[in-house]
Image 1: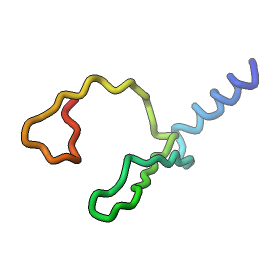
Image 2: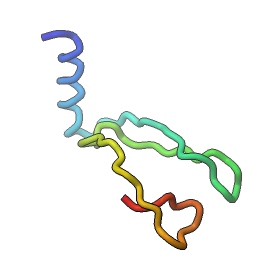
Image 3: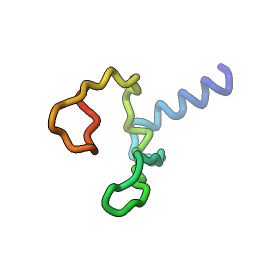
Image 4: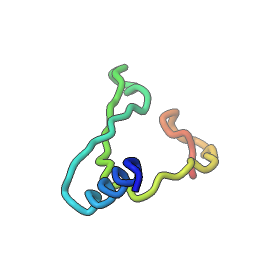
Length: 69
């Protein structure tokens, strides 16, 4: 088995444990404070990553809401 496959296999086995590896990301700025907001997700709890489907604009929504999926 290649090193890459061994690494993937090892990480897959860790997914069912309480191990923690956090991916940090930002989603723009807080409109009130003007600061960037940082969020995190435990990568071992992610089951699937999908492409974002088209977003439909919704009437009378605040500017912070882009639309609906």
